[in-house]
Image (cartoon, rainbow, N blue to C red; front, side, top):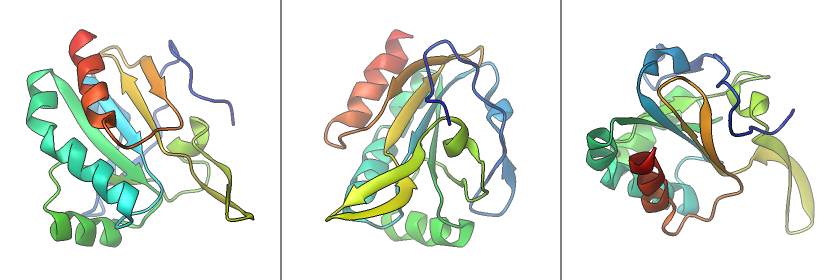
Length: 156
C-alpha cells in the first residue's frame, strides 16, 4: 500500500476496542488525534512506548488531542496488556486484513536476524481536527518519541 503522506485524509477504516466494540477514526472528528502503531503487546519496546504515551495522556488531552495505540493483537490480549501495565492510552486492534495499518503503509515486510516476515512498522500519525494527516513518523525510535509527538500536537 501507499505510505501515509502529510495532507492525506485519514482513511475511515474501523478498528476493534479491547471490549470488542468498533472504533472508527470518525469518532474523533473535530479534535486532533495521534495514532501510534506498534508491533506487539507486552514486548520491551512496545511496552515502553505505551507507557510513555500513557504517562503523557493528560497532557495530550489538555492539548485537545486524542490518543489511540494500534497493533494487530486481538482485543483480549490488549485487555491483559492494559491491566498488566495500568495503561491509560486507549488501544485498538487492527487485526483485519486490509486494515488501517495496511492502508497507511505501516504493515509490511520486515527483517530480523536474517528472517523475513510481515509485521507492523512502528509508526505514528498526527491527524488535525479536520481529519487530515498533519505529521508522520515512520519508522519510530521509542526513546523520547511520545514527548516529541506531544510537542507537535501542541504546535498544531
